[in-house]
Amino acid sequence: MRIRTVREEELPVLRVIERAAGECFRDIGMPEIADDEPPPVEVLAAYRRNGHAWVAADDADRPVAYLIAEVVDGAMHVEQVSVHPAAARRGVGRSLLDHLAGVATGDDLPALTLATFAEVPWNAPYYERCGFRRLDEATLTPGLREIRRREAAYGLDRWPRVCMRRDL
Image (cartoon, rainbow, N blue to C red; front, side):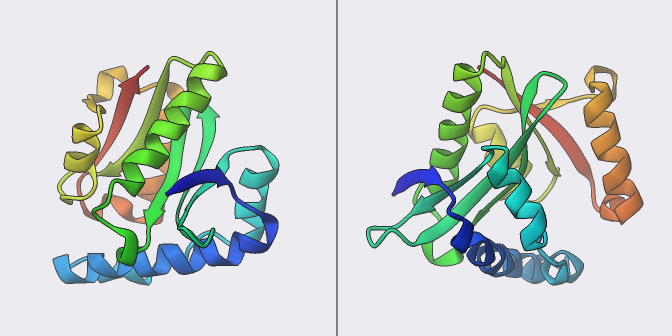
């Protein structure tokens, strides 16, 4: 897999990848997550314009996974990482996270952060294997608190959520 910046014409493909990746939530009793709409192309385009949108491309240079991020409280925050099921379990997600870590280091940012489901095997437990640690409420930055507030307003707190950090 090759990690590269997403191209403008590929933005709709990111939505296809996220929909496909979300289907596995149906199998664990979270159909609302599977049915959730991916970010609109306009939102994805903003991440691209800011230089914070990457894809993992296959040998034919077709995107099979993507990651979008933004800087939150001086750390690079993973907003979304999705891997198409056809490319899953091959280290693609980890490669995207490692690429982001390199970008963050190059930008003199000390860490990656994210918010995720605490008990979904391919969420918090996976990120722990990728070097992230769970943050308790007392260590959340103002920006992470705001992200959690928006998630709760959106209804994501129906399932346990956690913020995580990977120091670089």
